[in-house]
Amino acid sequence: MSTIFTKIINGEIPSYKVAEDEHFFAFLDINPNTRGHTLCVPKQEVNKLFDLDKDTYEGLMRFSYKVAKAIERSVPCDRIGMAVIGLEVPHVHVHLIPINEMKDMTFQHKTPVPAEEMKALAEQIQQNL
Image (cartoon, rainbow, N blue to C red; front, side, top):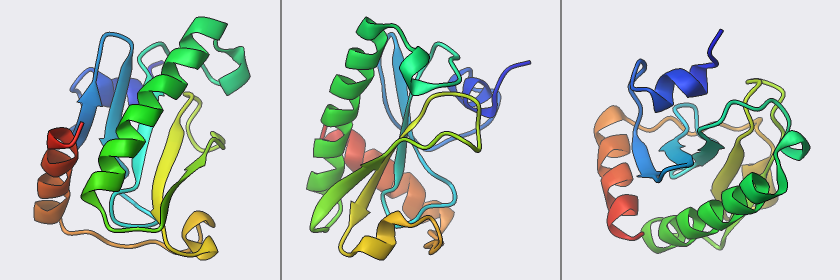
């Protein structure tokens, strides 16, 4: 059965897409730690980060770097934090989170963002790629 991320990639579930290429897809997290929290995923459905083949792993990191730079140009923050946890969805994903303090990376504090703002933010990040 397909993961929720595969369904997002295939357009079966709507998302706020930030970036896409042949192998990777990035979209805003709908339950963000902070405004601009983005997930980067390989299109290939693999459960664990270190089960990716080396080329896909390196490609995901390059793709995430590009997306992080665009987020940084779009969202005022001290830096972009990165986390790879992956327990909640069995599909490799990189969290890119605009942070100003350590609590922004804890996944305990969520920042509701209205749908209109999510759409505008996704478009702004796309423009900054």
